[in-house]
Image (cartoon, rainbow over the protein chains, first blue to last red):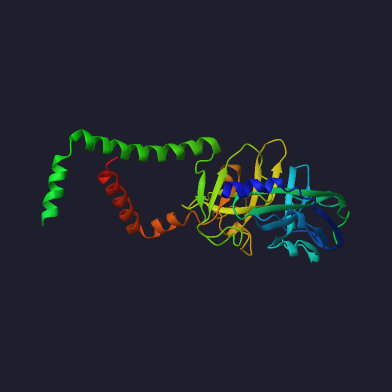
Length: 146
Length: 180
């Protein structure tokens, strides 16, 4: 029964939508031990209602900054996350500064171009978990610390 | 007292062949359970293919007593995945979500930071002293599937061992007394 419930999730073809704006660079500096850190204010708008099926317990969603540096081929830093417990909360617009610190491994963030990615992980009542994302590109950090 | 004598006689009258058969069928049950476990290890590539959630750090997604199925693939670890990891000096592996990934150029080395969905802070406090990041070798597998409540039996049996022995005894009795 659990297997059938889980398989029925495959019948759902979701059409999620999201948009993220950087409203403000609150501050941007080099930490005493040399890593760049930036604080952002974000506006996150999304409609994820189509991800819910009758076997969905909750959605775990998060926004990550993704970029590459001379040191690292890939950096993924989670900035904000939320748990969406039911379909009626899956269409939202939120104004927030980053919940987790945005720190680079090094000092490569000045003028850095990066993607903001909205990830979602569907946690089922039972069975297989699945995940996907929307990548939004073309964001850039300032050239100078502030 | 008659029924005791009767049952003693029935035990005496059991043929050696019959009791041997029962021992073997008991052994078959044990070994097939072992084979299923080892088979799962083989398929999933993880040294513990199934784990029971013991803490509340991933609530409300995973609750105490839920069973998670793990898979260890060659795919690189990415933010958002739920991984099971070992920390030096801790016996029990931890199931938490990856919130940061830094994959080094050229070498395939990767720095991973995790956090429990229900915890306020990241897991640096849980790591070994002076350890800032998890590496690939700490990861035992990633959670791919989920079965609610099915792990309660193991939690009860580890916390109240007497129940385990009573159960094993009962099962043994059942096997010995059952006539085919």
